[in-house]
Image (cartoon, rainbow, N blue to C red; front, side, top):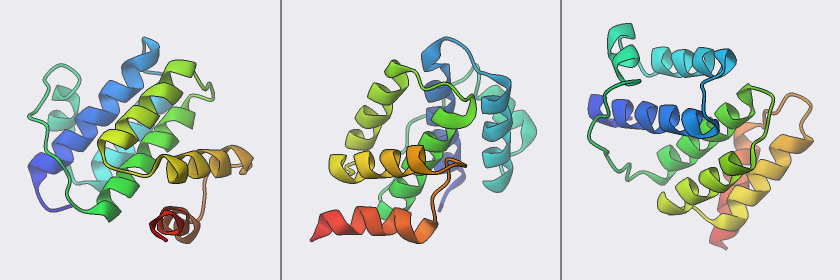
Length: 133
C-alpha cells in the first residue's frame, strides 16, 4: 500500500461495507481495528472514519485490489451472519475494482467451505490467476 490516503480510503470502504446490514457488529469493529493497525492508521484517524468520509482513492495494483476484496469477504463473515445485501454489495464492489466475477465467486465459495472461513493466500491468488488464462 503506497499512500496513507489509500489506506484511509480502503478502511472507509470497509466501514461502509460493514454498515450495509444496518449496524456494525462488535466482531466487525474488532476486525476493522486490526486492519487499521496493520495498515498503521492511528486510532484517532480510524475512529474519525466512522463519521468522516475521506476522498476515494482508486488502487491501481491488482494484488492490492484482490487483498482488499479478501478483507471485505473476511469482514462479511466476521459477525457470523451472511446477509443477502452484503453478498450483493461485495460483488458490486469487486466488479468496481475490476476483479473477475468468476474468481470472486470462487473465493467466496472456498471461504464458505473452509471451517475457519480463511483460505490460503496462494489459493486466493491462484483463483484470480486462473481467470487470466
